[in-house]
Amino acid sequence: KPWHRHLGPGHRSSVDAFVAQVLQKFPGWWLWVKKDPAAWKAMDNKSEEGVELGADGQLYWAWEARGQQKREPVVENPELHRIAAEFIRFAQTRWDKAWEEAQGKFSREESAAIQDFDRYSDRCWTCSAPLSQRQSQWQHEARRWCTQCWWEFQPSSGSRVTVAASRAGVRMWVDGVDLQLSLPDDLNSASAWMVLVDLVGQGAIGPPV
Image 1: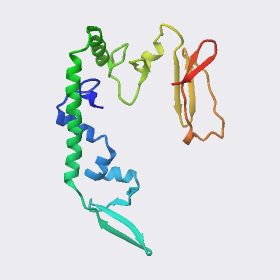
Image 2 (image 1 turned 120 degrees about the vertical axis):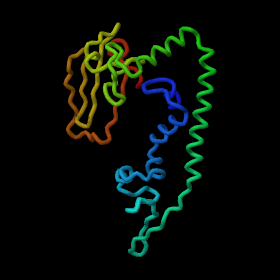
Image 3 (image 1 turned 45 degrees about the vertical axis):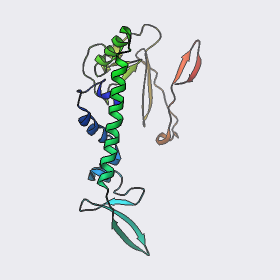
Image 4 (image 1 turned 90 degrees about the horizontal axis):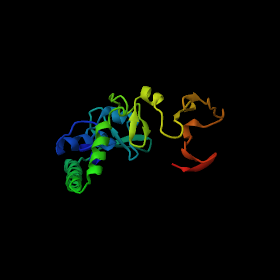
């Protein structure tokens, strides 16, 4: 997201360096621009459009005609790649300008809240230990904890509810007590959905969140 150049974990890079990072987030960049073998392997080496990566590192249209496999080189357009990157750079520059203007309109309290959030965006709220972007993302409002501190955290009101879901099933702890939930044996875990609901009052269930 464009605000990650100014807020959150990571160093503050230049616009060009940040755009380069953004491009690497797009699967299409790895497939069509970089022609990354690992990216194509993850797609069984063939796109929905019928394009595949050849052993020579080039892209080919591939199809079958009268029982024979046909291939034709994909005509590349480097200018299109350049324009796509330039568009991202333009959008980022516009956002940077809007952010600079917004900062001058924040109240003292708003500025302090933003700085406080930014300070703890990649660290445990309690012990300040660095947190991975893919693990230990226990969240409550804008706060995050490492696993150890989450289990020791005492909320100011209500219970501390932790839910862990995987293909194997769902586990829930309320104030550290394992409820030992079980799922039906015939549950199709590959297509299972989880909806979080807010418990309101005496056993009433609020709308999904």
